[in-house]
Length: 63
Image 1: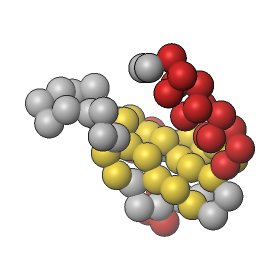
Image 2 (image 1 turned 30 degrees about the horizontal axis):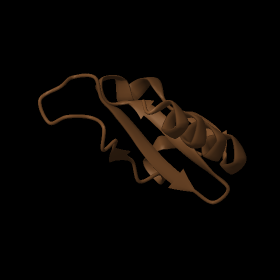
Image 3 (image 1 turned 45 degrees about the vertical axis):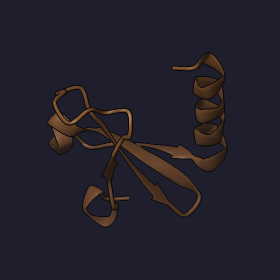
Image 4 (image 1 turned 180 degrees about the vertical axis):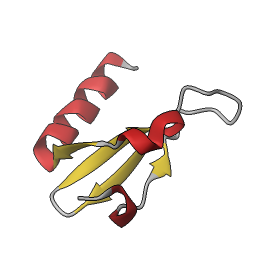
């Protein structure tokens, strides 16, 4: 998908004063991730099953 077709939102783990931010957008069948500071470089897309596995693993590691 093209970035302008996605509704990106800032990660809840990104603080208001930090420059290390990630944005996430959901789309049918998956999710997309991009660097807030480098939006013009594009985004990475993940199928829903891979995104769910990432979130589950991160949650288990308490990241």
